[in-house]
Every structure is written in structure tokens, then in C-alpha cells.
Image 1 (cartoon, helix red, strand yellow):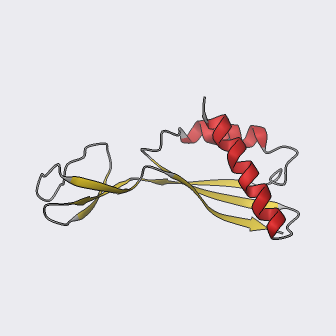
Image 2 (cartoon, rainbow, N blue to C red):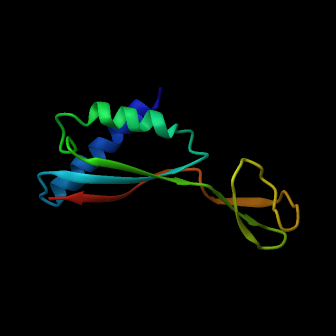
Length: 113
């Protein structure tokens, strides 16, 4: 389960940000997870809740925003959000598309004290 290593890296990043901002507590962590990121959201949440103990995030709320796949068609220039993995433009049926969102995980915001 690679979600554990992702959470460990996330907690290290949060610790660094908190230290840079002289914060002593993180009360909320918001992440964006693309459906094609390879991360299982429910496993990430379990891992976060397991590893946050005895860290600056000990009492933090963990919010996950799931990002669907967003594509831009090279043929018709339409931008569309896909609900399932099907790299085909809904407007013109072209498969010549660029994925512009939904493949990554990002730390979006922190609430710190």
C-alpha cells in the first residue's frame, strides 16, 4: 500500500510549511486527488489518520477533493471532464487529446495556528 509512503511525505511537507510559518498546530489539511493519480482515497485517509498522531497534524481535519479527468481535444479544442477513464473527446470523438488535470495529487491548503 503505497498510500503510507505518500502520507509520510505529505506529513513531512506539512511540517516544513508549518515550521516556515512558525505554526504550532495544523487544524485542517486539504488535498486534491486526481482519479488517475493511482491513489486510493479511502486508503490515503486511513494512512493519514494512522500516521498523524504525535505530529503537528494530530488533531487536523483531512479533506480530500477528488478531481475527475479533464482533457483538451487537439482536434476541436474542446475541454471536457470525464467521469470514467475513456480518453476520447465527447464533442468530436477524437482520441487525440491531452490530459490537463486528474493525474496528480496536490496539497491545496493548510489551516494553521
